[in-house]
Image (cartoon, rainbow, N blue to C red; front, side):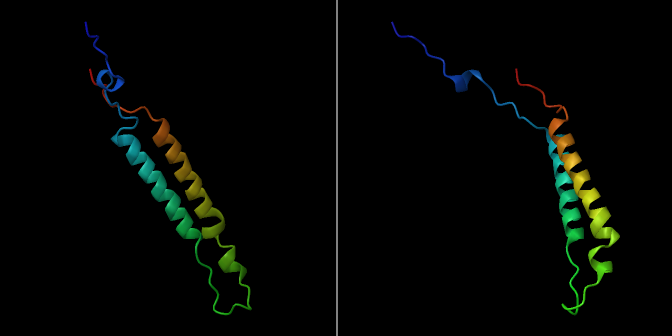
Length: 90
């Protein structure tokens, strides 16, 4: 008499971890982080021997860009922890 062996793959169905809305929030967070990093870039001086503090310590680089990066990280957390509306297969 032969035994029937059930394999784990045949009894379980694929349930996605994240839904579309989760990925959307994560992509928005990634875009905010990249935009914040782009706002920090620059400050090239025409004369390398002259230091211009208004370029290096501008509001855009010291305040706006880090706030945007932290906001993007918060959106990433929201995207990961948000309850997805994916229906479980029966």
